[in-house]
Length: 126
Image (cartoon, rainbow, N blue to C red; front, top):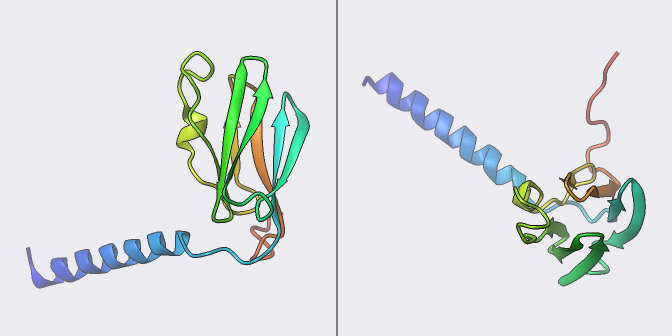
């Protein structure tokens, strides 16, 4: 490989690491709320700052979902295979910005973050 190839590789890796690091920067102090929907109806609304450091149980027909709140973020803890066989919803991980969503299709459960988005306009279409 030539010197130019090495410079290009280092540049691409550096930019990638920078962009990855930006994802983990703290979000502004805007009030973000988690709206928990079961079968299309809102069953609970959580202020992420008010329930900081707790685990919230959401009961449904087949069992219950456990939501962990920490550091201004929320995630769905893994459920038994009989309730959620593929566990795609728990593999979503932590969500912290308004507009992000966790969906559990087999149980018709959705956790949507609402509130002030920090950047204003996300996209413009015509």
